[in-house]
Length: 296
Image (cartoon, rainbow, N blue to C red; front, side, top):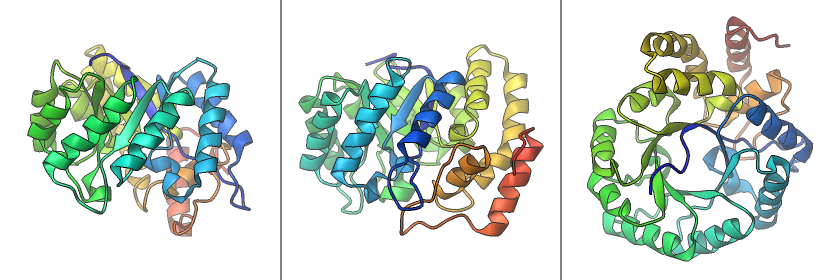
């Protein structure tokens, strides 16, 4: 399916208190911040949201809260992937019942299914729900890579709305774009490759950086959509040092620190993730200042 959403989406962090609880007050402010700065969709409980360290009850509470706080102002996409097909189906059905406009379903991870296994996994999820499903390919995190031909097959499933592509290989991405064109959308899932992916026809981006800089990520999309390429190049160049820093340690460690510096109360990551190292904090602070932000 085409046109589920076009524009910029944010892969939302989940803020935790010092005691390790979900900080719903901070999360509500983050949702408002995104909407006020033009973000088109919010991805809640994707990898950046640390669902692997959250209980099922916590995830349900976060989905309910997101639906209530967003109040129809923005599309809500809930993460529901798993390394167990049955669990992914169960989580997807639950996410739909809790008000998701669409789902982000990461490939199975660690147990490394075949390409046919990937097709059957997405087929099972899509048959269990009747809302749009975005496949998520991030082999550096999962150990599994959706090959272009496989994605071409998956794209034939009626409610597959797109693929969030974060394989990091532009040659593969170009072949995937060719396979899905006219069937479903391509979305950038790699902040370093937002501009080139938009250039080959991506319908939008699903960004980590936009937790901190939603206005700039929306502007990058709009420049590319309007054919204002020189403006897009200049903005991409301005953002690149900050983008590099957002991946200087494992995501979402750096972007949570950046959110703290911007007064958004990103909070600490859950173990085994740790807080951003002091040298990296200083670099992030300097980068935000260079972008015109006043930070402590």
